[in-house]
Length: 426
Image (tube, rainbow, N blue to C red; front, top):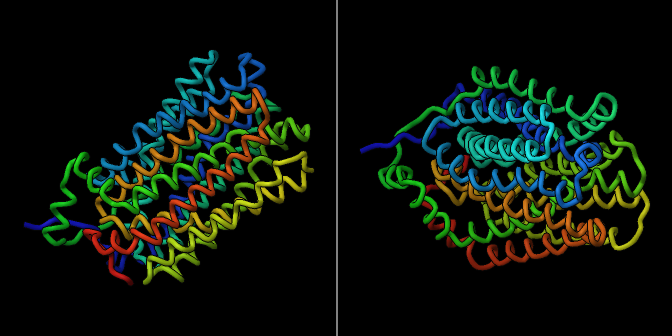
């Protein structure tokens, strides 16, 4: 009995594997641009719909929680069916939801569209990450995944800046109409250009593991102690990042009296420009130190997480624009150097047809926690201040670093040795 797994050694894939990364970079930019555009128009939504800060937070939470519910199923389907087609359908679906957002006239309609956006976007990231891993072996995997992730940061920066300017000039609906239409067009390109990797025969034990249903795959994931600790780490760090993504533009608008275009630009540039640079540098560095010794990837993650925490002390007082922006940049840069190791670590721990499911579960942890954090930040803002909410992020990152350190010291080597599949180290 034989099973087909992914063949990344074919000669024709040498050039295509980097073309694929370029295409997914573009789709990832659209993905994160569509989800983040709403933060740049918060003041206009608040004025038109008479929303409280908690209701604004609910718009972010509706997206995140719907995303969290479906992400494991999206990952599971990406392990069983065509990853390329799931990517294309997800892109078309969330672009349609973005178009509908621009047509809303009631608050409940906005919540519904944000929920639909979460449902449709949840299929993309597990499929895209697993498809990149199919084409890239450990020597280039961290770099390839980092380049794809940098597209997300690029999309956040461009969307926040342009959406704020367009909304202030032409109204808040137009950015969503533009985003949605662009996504529909790109989905046509993706249909023809994004392809699944070729297949080759695999050992029987790998076949049996890869044909398991969702419940058995989840049981396998949750039996992996390093993966469980990564779930906690991802939930905490992502919750903090989502708090920044959602509320930082409004913080700049209120604290420094910037217009919507400038606040959207400032609220994402320092955070995401740093992340975009650091994810590429970190991915390359991760490949250099951890391609043959995966344990080093985990240690790198731990050290950079601890090093990022002191920069958030800037929110203890009323700092200047330059001070806040500089510290946000440094925090994001150093933290993301560590984050660049997450996806390659998961690839080492999981077999190829379990990876998308694993990414889906990690996304559930990330966005589920993020939904709670965004809503919590809205409550803290309404009753205290955003400074306090952002200080809470330092505590989240500290606990995440501790969890990762525990995995590194006690569990990683054993879990790696028990991995049902190890990709060739080439």
